[in-house]
Amino acid sequence: MSWLCDLHTHSTVSDGTLTPGELVQRAHHSGVDLLALTDHDDVAGITEARARAEALGLELFPGIELSVSEQKGERQMHILGLGIDPDAPLLLERVVEFRRTRLERGARIVEQLNRHGIRLSFERVREIARGGAMGRPHVARALVEAGICGSVNEAFARFLRRGRAGYVARDGLDAEGAISLIHAAGGIASLAHPPRSQGVDAAGGLETFVGRLVRLGLDALEVYHPSHKPSQEKRLRRLVRAHDLVETGGSDFHGDEQREIVLGRGRGRLRLGRRFYDAIQARLAERRRAPQSI
Image (cartoon, rainbow, N blue to C red; front, side, top):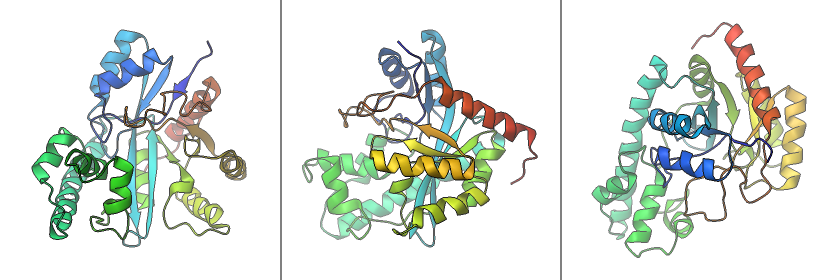
């Protein structure tokens, strides 16, 4: 079997359903040779994941997925930090702040739902989050558990998306801050699932959007993702070539709630070989030779 990597996954440290160790075990069972753990706004799972990976002979690639919010929440995106040092002091300092703001946002979401007659316990949401970086998926799971919704997708559609009763705009980094933080932690910055970014105008908007991020230091685009259509992948590959970026990809695995998503394979089309990892390592080497500032 050929060498396989997955550069976008989540554990219970953010909104996944498997612990970091369980995630690595599942990746090993799925034939993944290198796994990037990229929890939302947190790196607390890296130590556990790395220990399990070493025991299994799998390589653990430390990462993070930073939430970006600009223009009062009108423009939102996720930026992956790959190959970071999870012990970088500035990163750890910001992670503490991210945990606090995520907890505050979760409380506000539940408060808004309660005001609209949707009875939900914030303490139960905290229990579901299991000490991880709280996010809307934890509220969605609480809504399903309470019988208010039949699925996480329904919970988002009815209550948690922009314009719904439980939506609260996210306070987060701007893109420049996210990219700089990733570089300061020794990693490269990759725009996650670009077509899903919010606030990107339709006609030619993605090209302009990516061009701005490149000027801020963006290193890569997540070309391969389970939500991408072949036509979108083709468009993203053109942008990679136009801006001399690196291609990345991953399953965006969150656990068994999405049974159609398999680690290393996504919905079946995702198969990233060693050339992707080699290209990332080459860009990391370039970054390490360049002066860093934040």
